[in-house]
Image 1 (tube, rainbow, N blue to C red):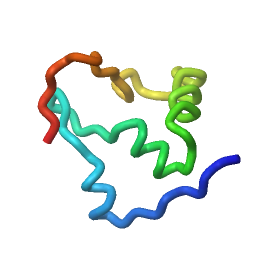
Image 2: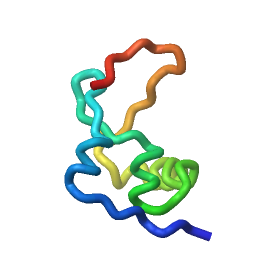
Image 3: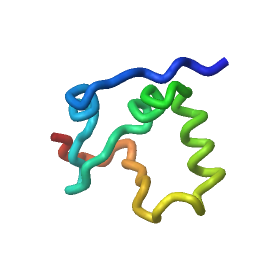
Image 4: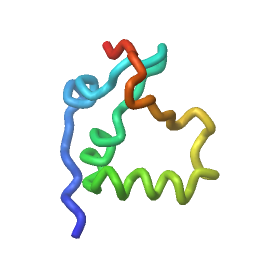
Length: 70
């Protein structure tokens, strides 16, 4: 069963955009919420269809990697 997509206004989306390593990003959990799917399902779809996304579409943070999030 899929969840209904969340509805966000422009300000709501801006609040979910962070700067990590100098790149503007939306965390996978937030993107999954926007699309109304589980985070696991979103990540599986991206992995399954990696050829349809630009090379810089996604990156993983190391579990203990200190980063600056603004």
